[in-house]
Amino acid sequence: MKTKVIIMGAAGRDFHNFNVFFRDNPDYEIAAFTATQIPDIEGRKYPKELAGENYPNGIPIYAEKELPDLIKKFDADQVVLAYSDLPYSYVMEKSAVVNASGADFVLMGPKNTMLKSEKPVIAVCAVRTGCGKSQTSRKIFKILRDKGLKVSSIRHPMPYGDLTKQVCERFASYDDLEKYNCTIEEREEYEPYIEMGGVVYAGVDYEKILREAEKESDVIIWDGGNNDFPFIKPDLFITVVDPHRAGHEIGYYPGEVNLRMADVIIINKMDSAKPENVEIVKNNIKNRNPNAKIIEADSPVTVDKPEIIENKNVLVVEDGPTLTHGGMKYGAGFIAAQKFNSKIIEPRKYAVGSIKKTYEKYGHLEKILPAMGYGEKQISDLEETINNAECDAVVIGTPIDLGKIIKINKPSVRVKYELEERGKPDLEDALKEFLKK
Image 1: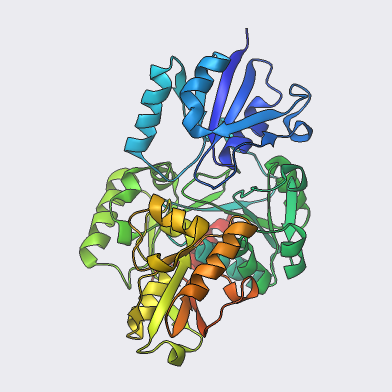
Image 2: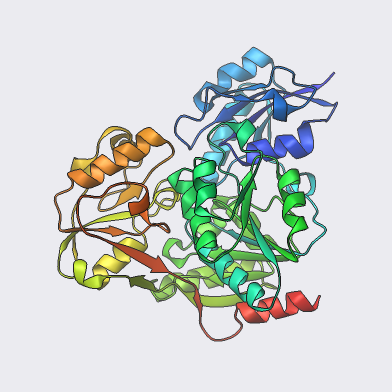
């Protein structure tokens, strides 16, 4: 008898766990996926082209709210939770739902889900969304490239479109962003690499992605998403923590996994965090992973044309995932606006369509506008919301040039932020030991 399984996901870890462990496993039958976190990703199928010969009709993807009925419908034996950035209370609530419906609740670990690379791998992960993984990964990329090494980054998946066209994606130019019809979330991660002249891979099948990246790389960077642990076994494991959310490093799944597994832990954003919160984070690191090397770092913000926003009424637009399931009330744009004495307007009353629904779902959002753009309709709603706003200028705190995607009817500035280590040890030191090995 095969074990019948439902995989709970958000179009990322769920597909990876299926590909590497369940797809060709004769002991299991995947009855369904469920989906959440991302708008409108349920109602699809994991296509037969990717599901393998055991699933000639593909695998249906349902909304997570249907889970109790699905467990009964398919007589499921196990339910595997396979997405991230979740408070422990939420995880155990899902466990209660699953157990009450009669099934086992499962969390899969690194042993059964990590691929092994023929090339050295550096993993950059975090304890929450929005800690500063991307800027850390970019700095590592620059350091390694300056040493004459060929480097490719592999990014955590974001396949929200036609999965058959997203099996293995390589981004090295702006044309590639158009080729794969990237969402705003995807552009936020890929554009900075393209600006540096780098290459980044992403997609659905990470075995194929890894083998392609190996062909053109001396070293591979795993650029994580949310607070998930890596899909590829790292030779150097770096975890970024955020003192703006002190305590979250030991209260969210699987962020604490990353904290405990790390060789190096970067305490980021120290320049804008409260000293007492930095101490909380340091104590939690000491208690959970006393052998990890700690790097202290700032994340200073810069604005390209500060005169446009200084002492003006501004709308602040921030990175979407950091604000939504990342739980932040503000980001780099907010800090930049405060730096230049801007008056930040409240954007809620200008919101339309899916942006209005985002505010209804995430009640903690007050003075900032999340740059939601998971599809054309949502991008259109974002544009209309921005253009509705009565203000002097727009502060764009996302990692991309939002003006390339939408037409903004008022002056705007871009906020940038890079990782700056404080003293020693720094990333150069960590990479020097890694390269010696």
